[in-house]
Length: 321
Image 1 (cartoon, rainbow, N blue to C red):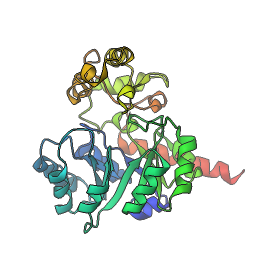
Image 2 (image 1 turned 30 degrees about the horizontal axis):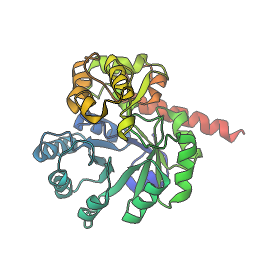
Image 3 (image 1 turned 90 degrees about the vertical axis):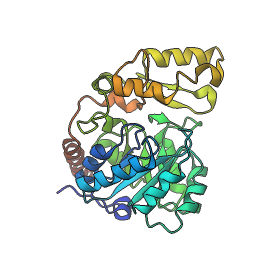
């Protein structure tokens, strides 16, 4: 039986301290249920559902697929859409956990005052972690500069950032950015974290059925150096796979194109063009540097077996130290 006990597993009532990232346009009931059934916390992504009722249907689907805890992720500042109606669906459906990324979580916490859902906030600095704790977060997820998707502006790697945040708050800290295996999980625990969040690793799994085979293949074939940070000139740095389109985006940023000059290139539609259709000349896909550590596309259950086996091996090695 795969089971670990940390402050995170206790808080979320899960068996392994592993959270699946929000994964815009990819985190639906099939993947989330597979992660929850394997012992982690699977998540649905709310703001890329077509409507609040679409989110409700996904919540019902995941409950048909698992009786384990799951979460709903709200990227409140990245899609330009009002989130209040989506959030109300999650509240009405009494989902076990709600995570907040991409914006100031204050208004969300106000709406969650009477909700029993566990509240998690993605942060990239000590100050943000302390604010989340003051608002009532049950845990914070801290993303280092290695991570995929949107990052902090300070460019601090996880090895420094994770223990700094751990020392700054009294709630569980989840390490994010650069994690894909048991060694990473144990490293996070050694740094004081109570678990890990993985995004890129879950894209390259069989149950991530919405991701195009070409997107997964790019991740599997990528080296550690095959990601780039785009949107840095806009004050919203984000890490993606190196593709012809991200090369063009960087060229346009270098020449000072500004938001108006690149807004089409960085749009959600461009993202979907690659992740759904595999067109790397016309689209882009988020991925962290950990893509260089991923070389297969297992089932989620196989992945968790592997992670737990590595954890057990390391525990035995540490016992001899």
